[in-house]
Length: 428
Image 1 (tube, rainbow, N blue to C red):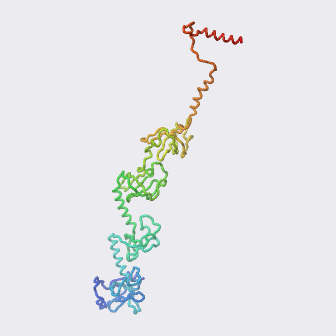
Image 2: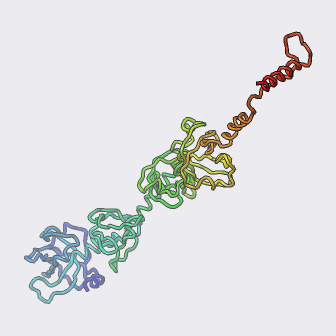
Image 3: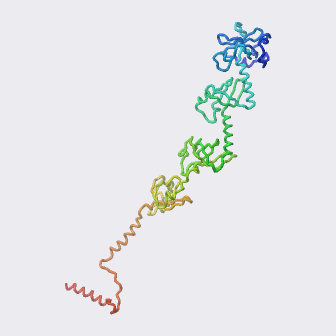
């Protein structure tokens, strides 16, 4: 009811800015005072109930209850007014009991009216205001501006805030997004100002980013396809393929929100306000010094990453995959690589060749195994030798001459000797 009465206030006496005006001049004038009038009065005294007695002129007096003295918290009325002060008040109602004055007055309503006028002017001029957060209430915060302002939870920050208690008692800058003095409605926002600040920071960051440069950033968000990293006020995307040299299933395998990382600026699109970044470009390449780490002829372990019709790709170190061709899987004939290896299996391989320039490395499984065919071939001559008749000797074809003059035996001599040997054996 009091708020409705305030809406009907009509000034009955012109206010003056002459604070040096003596109260005796005011008191000499007999003023017709009506409900809702805005009038001037002099603080005469403060009674035991902390009510302020105000002289209104012409012998008329009014009383200001403590609740109508100020919107601010106070311990005693003297914290707000002093005896002899000339103040503006509004008449709330007429008092039938004239012992303590003829009218109930409010200084707070006049002060609030001035505040509403100032707030309306700030709203019209697109100005900001600064105020402390007084309370956390359902759905948001209240602020004290001499009148009550409300900040919805969705307008507190640029992101969702679960605990609003962290804001209570702190002073922030707000923008008025709705104002209706008649309905005493004041809606404020901190979010719109933060968004404006962030937009300015993004513009500045976009202008300062140079393609090819390396800068530090913070991981602010992870998705299935990559990570968003804030660099100087602008969020850039590190695609999943640019997080590490090796293949990863998810950005979460390598990164966490809040991580500080070095990134290389791949591309800056100022029109679309998009930035492409890379983490792996700042890391040492997996093929660097590969010839020293895995020289040809060395043996190492690896993980089978892919199995194809023509062989298997084996990861021998993060970011380095080599091919075991189907012909290098076994000494026997292999119809399909799946007969020998399976995906994600750990195997031993031998390095056949390394080409860092082409990022290729050839591997072999069969080179670590004995060739059964070589064993069979090496045993074959031995078997043939054992089957050769004993006593058989290789002799040169003898000369058919009767006598070659050099002491050689003739064919007849050799046959005769052999026959003689047989005959001697028979006689024995």
